[in-house]
Image 1 (cartoon, one colour):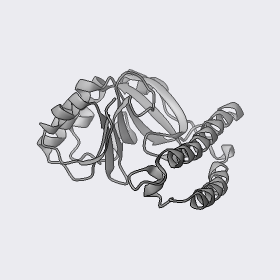
Image 2: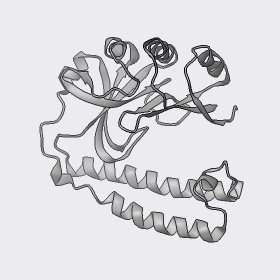
Image 3: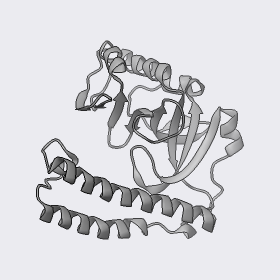
Length: 230
């Protein structure tokens, strides 16, 4: 697949063309909002375990990348300026310390509110909600990710003036960081079509060879980050 980024402000026609493209190729969309409701001990433990697993997986991926690519400039290690085994060991050591601190900087007792009105959002077409510290564009804050069928939010997206607009209001709730999914709710890159970081103002897309050819016809400015077709 090809990995590309969009940083520039799109005009109205480009933005509408992007949404049409996404609705054509994706079945679901998620919107994110900071979690406000109560968390049980079991819920909090699940969220923390999920976070720890993701942090550990990242360190394994960095080690595998170095063993495979030996710090080539285009690799993950190369972009981190890791070119020797000594630099790799130092990086992994520092990251383990940071990860331990990062993992425990959230406390369950801070979440005692009423939370989202699930019934209200279900009436707007929400099909799933996931409480997590990991989204397609962020890691850290405990977040409620609400998943909808793409057609349910057509009006909200048509009303946007920028790809990075936030908040995106649905039933009085202010969401951000939209992401489009091809078939299900899986975060694997092959299932994500488009993810947007509203605050940092960047977006990422993962396209097949045929999708890329179609996307290029839209005349939307993008930066090609990586190309690797299966």
